[in-house]
Length: 269
Image 1 (tube, rainbow, N blue to C red):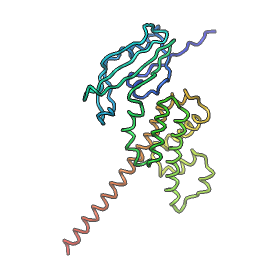
Image 2 (image 1 turned 120 degrees about the vertical axis):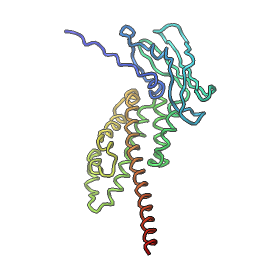
Image 3 (image 1 turned 60 degrees about the vertical axis):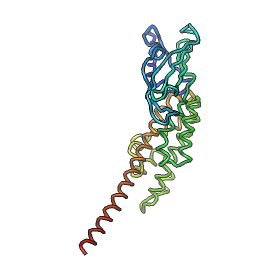
Image 4 (image 1 turned 180 degrees about the horizontal axis):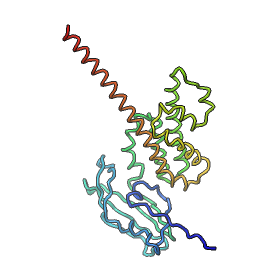
């Protein structure tokens, strides 16, 4: 009977490794299969990311690689050092460790949270201050290897979005609060589909993923899943932002049309 050969997962790209992958998440490599870490170690390109010191996105170019040991198989430490193209004094550093067939990022400056915060600020308008802080905490926890805690905050955000939709739906005369209260989360989302972004309704199973992460998955499993779950939450928030912007435009257009109508009435008089 043939023994199934172990599948070695592909390493993330350098951009993903530096800007998305949490610290200490391990990836296997197999040099015999040309799936080593050399693409990371020998990277000579650029990263497009937020520069905390410039206060805006910038292009960072790699300047040098440094090494702490000479063996590629026992505790081989290397780093990628970048300089901001706007100001060479603004720098970024990513440190990696390769050890016995696995590679992980073990340190970085700026942190993932520092890099993410500017892009998250737009969500404060739909989340409010408290939930916005929870989103920041989720990212901060994931950055420091606390996957389950990060999932707890993302689930709280998800639940708050559902509750806000329920409040709006309950204003309808045909709303059945007793039916809603006894429903499962997936059923609640279906009941609220007219008050939620399409992406959330289409991916209502996300809540189950968050709950499994909180109650069942290991820290490592949660950290591995965190980037995808975070992306899903952000897409839901993007949908809410689009709804908010559309409503503001409709209100503005209605006021402008009313003003034009009033002005036209005066001129007729």
